[in-house]
Length: 81
Image (cartoon, rainbow, N blue to C red; front, side, top):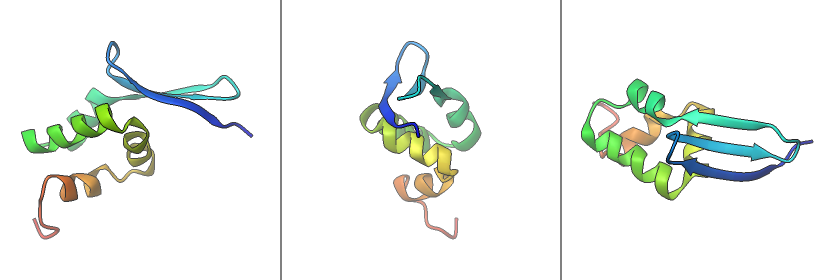
């Protein structure tokens, strides 16, 4: 079984990098995620804040496929919008 040993945002590559105990690595392209899911500056800011301050939570959102749900809450949009 592999265990997560680190998760950090690499500002040089604009990726959240997850490193596992078996030597494998997963890199999430944050620019691609923003391009796919954000429509407003407020939404981009919400993702930027998360990636810089809580990269593990950011990675979990992306891997779970719950970025849109997070953006609705974080950007203050009503669920009916």
